[in-house]
Length: 210
Image (cartoon, rainbow, N blue to C red; front, side, top):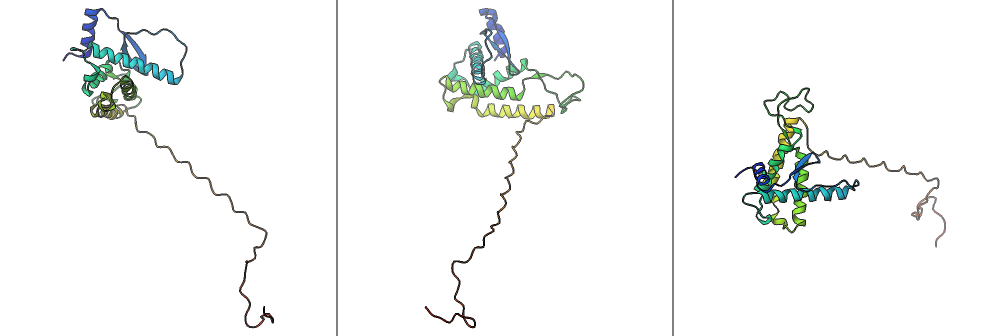
């Protein structure tokens, strides 16, 4: 099967479609829709706008596929093909094991190692597309973005980039706040007398009876 890039170029040649490249969250993705300048949206609306752009881009990938794919026939394998296609627009340097800077978080000099999409960007992208799939009528049990193959691929990318870049992607555990010390007990100045005491016996007993 031809690569997605070849399919895009073939589609452009026959249908004269204009493909734009957008850079959002360290991912440059193809989109056939141009967005006009707008006021800075809130965080929730930014997420929704990005999710809509991602979904439109993935829909374009399905249409350009040969033969064209419908959403119901899309599988985890097609999602992996889409993620690998995005690597050509990546901006994250991933050192190869043969590179002298392998495992160095701050290499002192440039190197010819490839640029790829950062694991965090791909992970966030898959999360948005997974939500968009179900919002557009897909069933959770058939969601290709939640396929086991996709989860394994993201884990592999995370481990590979963590070793190559010398960074850790493990989530830091939140330290539990120490419990405040108990308040000091206040000493009472009053003397508490017993409610009852046994009657005295033997010598010194009171010489009367009730």
